[in-house]
Image 1 (spheres, rainbow, N blue to C red):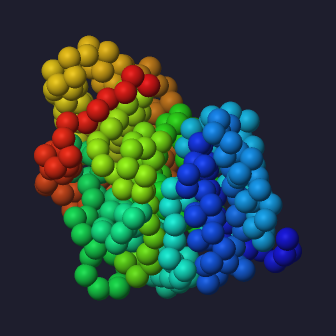
Image 2 (cartoon, rainbow, N blue to C red; image 1 turned 180 degrees about the vertical axis):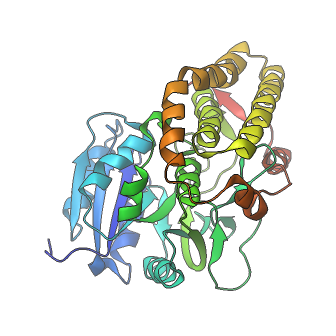
Image 3 (cartoon, rainbow, N blue to C red; image 1 turned 30 degrees about the horizontal axis):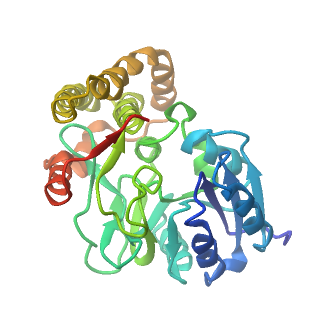
Length: 352
C-alpha cells in the first residue's frame, strides 16, 4: 500500500451481498480518482459465500483490505469497525448494492471540498436505469420523519441537505470521529438521520451534489424480488421496529423542545400506523413487535439517550428554531409512502 495518506477511505459493509459485490467493486476500480482511495471491505458474517468473495475482491483492489467483523453487527457498528482502521481524509460509507459512474467520486470530493461541507453525497439513481432515487435527507416533516426530494434539483450546484443517505454517506474522517461515529445502539435504520442531526446541531453542514451520479438497488436484502428493479414493497417486523424506534431516538438525542414536540407527534403516528398495519395484515404480532415494542424500547433506552442528549448539548451550536426555519417541511413523509402503496400494492410483511 502507498504510504501516502489516502484522500478517501471507502467503507463497504457486506452482508449476503453476493449478487451485488462484483459490480460495486468494479465500479470503484474504474473511478477517475481510484489511485487516491483505499477500500475497506467488511463482512458481517455472511452466509451466502460473499464473505469469501469480499476477501478476494479486497485483496485484488490496490489499497484494499478485508475486515471480518466476526458476527452480524448491524449497519452501525459494522461500519464503525472498519472506519476505525481507515487512513483517509474523507470516509465514504457505501452500500454493496450500488455502482458508481466513473467520475462520481471525483465530483463528490471536489464538490464537498469546494463548498466547505463536512458531509456530502452524490445524486442516487435507481440501479437499472436513470430514474431518480434520492440526493439525501431534505429535512423533517411535521412528525419528525426524514423527508426527501421528489426529483433531481435543477442545476449542478451543491444543495444543502440535513443528512446524506446511508447508501453513500461521505464525511470528513475527523468530523466522524469527533461526533462519535454511528450509534451502535441503533443497529440499523435511521442511522444517517441521527448522524446528520448531530452534525447539524454541532455547526456542521452537509450537501448533495447533483453532478456526481451513482446507482442504488435499495432494500436488496429485505426486498430481493426483481433483481435490479424493485417490483413490490416488502418489509419485515424487525425493519418496522428499528425504523420506528431509531427515528424517535434520533430526535430525543439531538433535539431541544421543538424537536421533542415532533417526537410526541411521531409517537401518535406510530401507534396509528401500527393499528392500520394490524388491520391490513390481521396479525397482532406486527403491531406488538413492530410498533408497540419500538416505543417501549425507547423508554428502556432512556439512560442512553439522556446521556447522549447531554453530551450533544455540550457541543450544540445551532438551535431547534434554526432547524425549523431551514429544514422542516409541511408535507408528511408518509404521503409519499401512500403514493408508493397506490402504485405497487400493500406491503408484504415478513415475520423476521
